[in-house]
Length: 338
Image 1 (cartoon, rainbow, N blue to C red):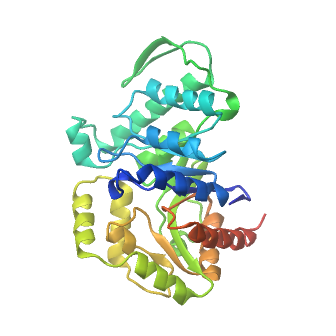
Image 2 (cartoon, rainbow, N blue to C red):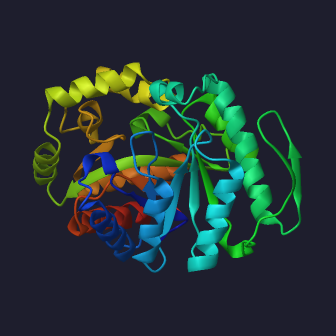
Image 3 (cartoon, rainbow, N blue to C red):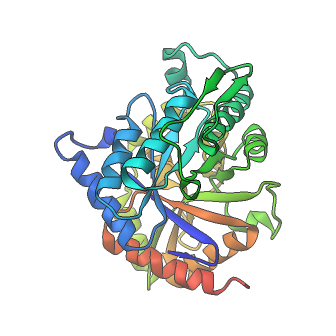
């Protein structure tokens, strides 16, 4: 699933929905499915309620041959030197590239528990300095000295050195103006939770080097079959709706606010492939596209036409589901002008 400059990432299941005695097996299995279907990498979440993402990344690397972990990194959790050391160590031990998904932190109760009261936009200013220092350490074998508002290092050298071909790709949330500014400042891929594609009106609205989206896909040859699968997998759930409402109250993330607003404006309409019921019922953290291969492929082609390049899929339900998604991307990318 990597053609016409389109790279596809799947997503690793979060540990809080899994049993301790089966979680690593599940991670390894989904990583192997993702690699078999040609994914470039796999997103690994982080927050106060999840296991350490670097240990999950280690499991992914040891059970695949080329799949790249997209490790979510929260500045409050780790010093930039520790992140650079993890990247360099995985490269040294396994010859594997990783991607970094740098998040500012959107759940206020997580931040409060760590006594981090930094305002939303300032957290993105911190992200810029944080990521710049990580990349400076990884780009050179020479000592690095840096003094900024958030971090200071003096004559700090990264050992082992990182081969240039294994430099990490960097993703940053681009759902807010502050996030887009951060992505521009560090040359990162701005990741967004997309609106229905018709709302973009063929305009590239980003002003960044590269933009990607998080999206789930359920597609079948016949649209009715796709909707049956979708509603069976993500039934409406009052407990989930309450959990979603609580998460909204505890978040200042712009993407959470934007998707929730879209959900209030929209509905459950089989004529519209853009579907937010899984998000609204606290089953996923992204919108879905549901329908026939042809209809969903048309939507994907239009998102590519807007300017989106990396696509980060939701947690795959099965290898067969990834095969359905691969067919959608084959058809979608074939409709995009060279």
